[in-house]
Image (cartoon, rainbow, N blue to C red):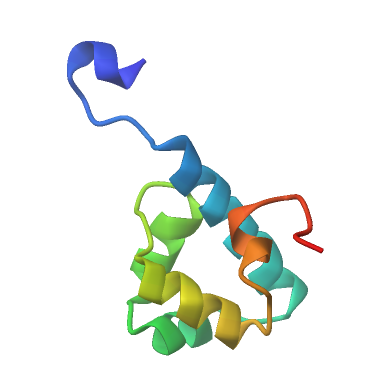
Length: 82
């Protein structure tokens, strides 16, 4: 709806990745500060990513999956790749 008023909308892919990142971060018992340090971001930026309001670069996605000991598909899809 924001796009109608020429306000930036939320990219559905960023929202989905952010939600998965938050789910896995919590499941692994990792705080936003620790994840932020691993991705060279601030905790505020991590909160924006998890809310779907900021995208991650491919390098940041790779760093997040490494930090959380996840395969890449875990942040990109709800369907297992294997």
